[in-house]
Image 1 (tube, rainbow, N blue to C red):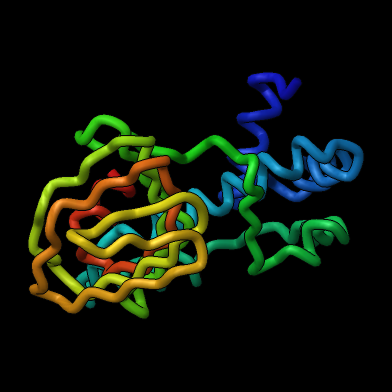
Image 2: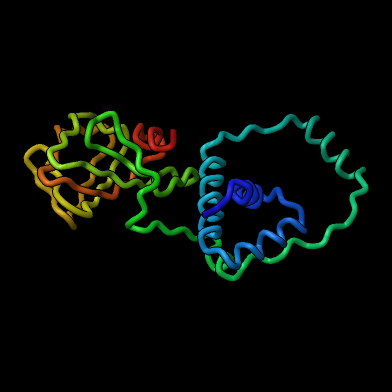
Amino acid sequence: MITEHRQELASLYALGALDAPEAHAFVEEMRADAELRDLVIELERTSDLVALASSWVEPPVALRGKVVARVAALQLPEKPPVPAMPVALAALAGLRFEQAAESRGWKPLPIPGAAIKLLSFEKEHGYAVLLGKLDPGTRYPAHVNAGPEDFFILTGDLVIGEKKLVAGDFHHADAGSQHEENHSVDGCTLLAVLTKDDPLVAFAMA
């Protein structure tokens, strides 16, 4: 079990807010605790999503100059370098994994029996990857697609109008196209690629 104090240290480490001695001690703790390493990876992923979702505000030129001048005037003592990341974490830098059994991250939609889970948000490239899930018998109302959509059925079945899709089937919808009522007989899980401004993406990130 990860204590509240270690959770706080993990948050500070993920944000780069620990000084060198604290970071070194925490790295040693992570070497011996896989659960703690997983927590740090999840926190780093969350902080990345928050940063990507935030709008960039360019500081005034005058303020930038003042900050640079103040920093240049500081006489800071030299600090020992922050210890290298454990090999296990270093090997995962820039990589993220989602286990099939992972239950965290699902958000119920206002439609009973429907839920989504954000897997990846690529703000710069303009798209997001989500999982969608419908319980058996769930009906998703007719709607106009705000942007292009790509669906790949992973499990179960999805009926769109008179077309039934099953595991392994793919579906594309153009922006502005009309979807009739969707429903699933036995329940389904699907992988969806949507544009970053799609209402479902906004809901998943809220």
